[in-house]
Image 1 (cartoon, rainbow, N blue to C red):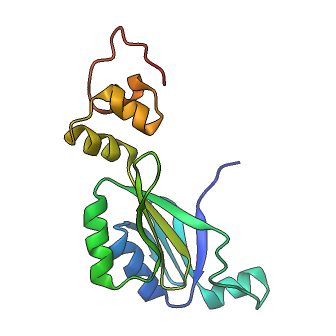
Image 2 (image 1 turned 135 degrees about the vertical axis):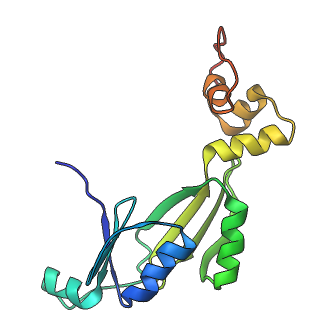
Length: 162
């Protein structure tokens, strides 16, 4: 068995297509009404078509029982884009205890989207602030060799697991 992707029902295919393409930067791989497929295996399907597929008229939006998770190398640019598009937030950006910044917001049908700062970007941010690999590893609760590898540093002879 092979996981093929996540399908979400949408009320306005055009509006949702624009949201996932323009805000999240996803690339459309197929676009055949009533379905749009993006890279990363996200599929949008028109609500009426979805209702016919599942043979039920009961579909609940805004149930807060799941989210789609993404990571970005440029978290600051994403926040600027979100503000430009007037996004409805679940919460504004927060920093998690290990230093990663995340934001959660709604798509046009109130599916929850979480976008986190890519872990390598967090490491580079800490390095740019003057922390060495050992300090970053301790702060992020990661293995120092992993941090050094991500930062492009030599790990030869090092064995500093955190």
